[in-house]
Image 1 (cartoon, rainbow, N blue to C red):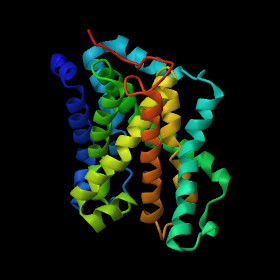
Image 2: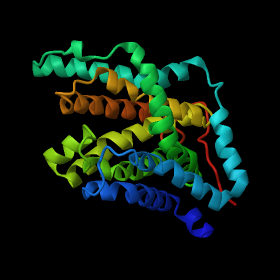
Image 3: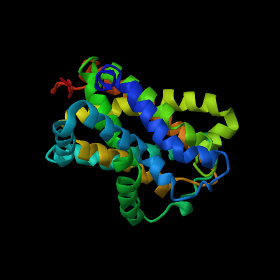
Image 4: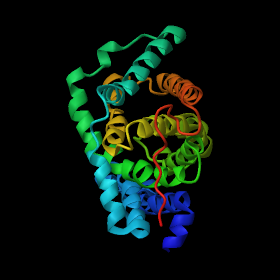
Length: 279
């Protein structure tokens, strides 16, 4: 088992995370369990649960200690904290403004939640899904092991593909907007593939750049992922897809610029990529 996981970490992370999450979401998709059931939290934690299990298999207690040690890396420079907390929010605000400008739609600022709501929404995402739920899998287990074999760009693309396909249930469960709406409008498979190409792959590139430049800080990865809370502050519930598509275009352009500026080898001009080679 250990040898197989070491040889195929991406496949193992994907299958185990999907099995853990699918055990919960499959009955919901089938209508046997309400989609708003609290059991969805098990699926939300599936990526991290898989990462912890696989780390224990290939690296034992020492690997788990190293994983959790990286949750304590916080001295990375104020600039990285500012980026992690606010970059996605700025992208989404710009996307909303551009969409309103070029579509002629009304900018529904009255629908925005008070800015102070970012704090509780951020904490919820940090603890309940995006941060703790996923990052021990994608950046805790998978990325550093891929970077031991491939350059940072290739590693990011592989993580992005696995990460995107893992989102399959969100395209099938009502109430998971905008992914559910995309699945309804375009079909589940085309929407999932499009999401993987234009969302999770570019985002994985940004994450790797962020991760390698912060010394492999999982704490900052938690923060960056949890900053999706800005979407809840600014999005218009009656117009989800339009601004979201502009946002993913901005995300993709940003990822391309990062690769051109930082280089594919490490996605960093100053630091080597963070790699873990299991014995």
